[in-house]
Length: 252
Ligand code: ADP
Ligand code: MG
Ligand code: MG
Image (cartoon, rainbow, N blue to C red; front, side):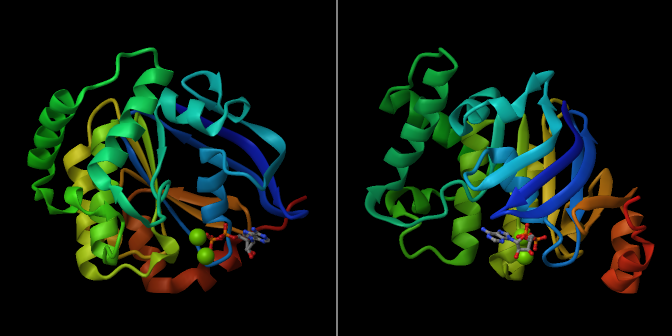
């Protein structure tokens, strides 16, 4: 589904990703862990097509398509979702209205008909039920005064509405409390399906106590230096990232 090969990415003239290779198949949850500054968020951002990330070498294909050739909106339309896509507060803009606009923009890009308010509300009710969420966040301004946990719940709700094939969640720098972690984990677990993949980027092993990943990758110094099963996250927890740094072999 997602195939990243020998990806090199520079930010502001500095090489951050230095030959990253990773493959994701549908139905799987992959975790990317690594020390601060390793390039985890850079990976998420470059996949989402954010500005300021220069790909200097390598390829990214999503379902056989060159993902890097697509605009961010086109990536979303093909089914790639990056959480924190809309982290900003937009006071006065009703969250329901905002979510419907986001969904309809995606439907339009796919050549599907837009949903009217009634159809959208029906969908909203279905998704709220799946996630065991209340509708209180929908009536407020977008992220307006939301706590960290509420922002997370809202993002997971976006994810449920947009039904991406590949969801990328970067949790690293958000200082999540335990409620927020659980909100993310419950959402991911409820939305796992055979035709959807998750790339969960996290600094913290504790998130993986709630989301059981199929595969764990360790990202250090711009490369995947280790790939394994869920036990790899526990090893990291035990030995810390110093253990990883010892294992990085200098590039030839
Ligand atoms: P991680 O998410 O693993 O902590 P990041 O991908 O955020 O790492 O950052 C990797 C490196 O890239 C860091 O050294 C960081 O300082 C640098 N970096 C990230 N974004 C920028 C930017 N916009 N300008 C300059 N340097 C950046
Ligand atoms: Mg960081
Ligand atoms: Mg980060």
